[in-house]
Amino acid sequence: MKNSILAGLILMSTSLLISTSAGAGAGTVEVNSLRGESDIDSPSNQVVIKRNISDQTPIARAYVQQPPLIPHKTKGYKINLKFNKCLTCHSWANYQKSGATKISLTHFSGRDGEAMSNVAPRRYFCNQCHVPQANAKPLVENSFQSVEVIK
Amino acid sequence: MNIKSLIKTLRSPSTATLGSLLVAGFVAGVIFWGGFNTAMEATNTEEFCIGCHEMKDNVYQEYKETVHYTNRTGVRATCPDCHVPKPWIHKMARKIQASNELLHKALGTIDTPEKFEEKRLHLAQNVWRSMKSTDSRECRNCHNYESMDFAEQQRRAVASHSKGLESGETCIDCHKGIAHSLPALYEVDPSAVTGNAGH
Image 1: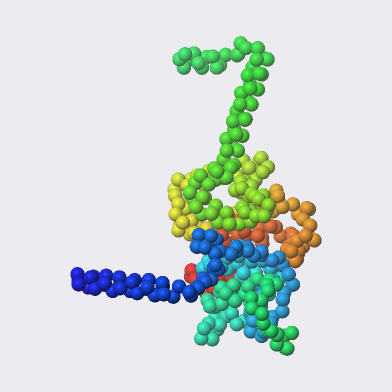
Image 2: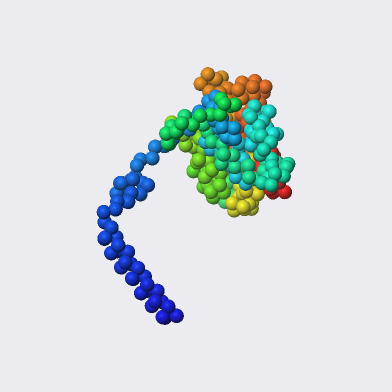
């Protein structure tokens, strides 16, 4: 037991020695973290708080399998084990009264394709796929074009 | 003064002048009425409501995340604004009802988060029922239908308000769970919960 602890200590100290000497040798390599070049004790780039966008007309899908965007605010809408705020309007039982779009039939099939009598657990967390729409700039410049059939 | 002479004094007509009796009665009335209303108002503050951990740890915490507590302009509602009627007679009725809440405070009916959660649906339905029966009177203390400018409302709000309110629906019919967490909807609306959890 004692021997193994001693061996561990020796290993640790040698590795520490090696790493410090390597660090000194490779001093010319600059590594930037994702938070930018700001000092560790100063705040990184200021986070701009995004505003919730009010109701708008829906933006069309850009590709066939795209989950439709949400054309309204979802601030404060909760989804948990006990209730799903979205479904209080978008479920098949509620959509007519609320005038909302009903969730599609695909939400009723389980992972093995089995038909279920209520929304499938894997389709329960709406905002995993559906997000409120915003006129956000693309993060990366690209030449994406919608397919012809849904243009 | 022993009891016998006290009773005798009380039974015999007062020797004071009518004027001083009236003044004394008036002053006593002011003190009593003022004291009564002061005590009543003291029970009508948010500090009083969240003096109990049942309110402070459950509904108040949920409430703090909602628009009635935190918003752009900082105008906010406190517990009694929504839960205690403003008109005097209804306010008294509600205050008398509150004795039932004192009983359950003493019994510890909802003194743990688990017990509270167990009762949440029942408690929520009580509030929904009473708001429905008063045509959402407490909502309308601030939200005056006459003063609503549909042109300023969101697309969805205009559609729902013009359809719902015209057909005699009231605020609480749609605006449930806006200031506190909704109860589990297994029984109320199974279509808004996944699977058959809870059954």
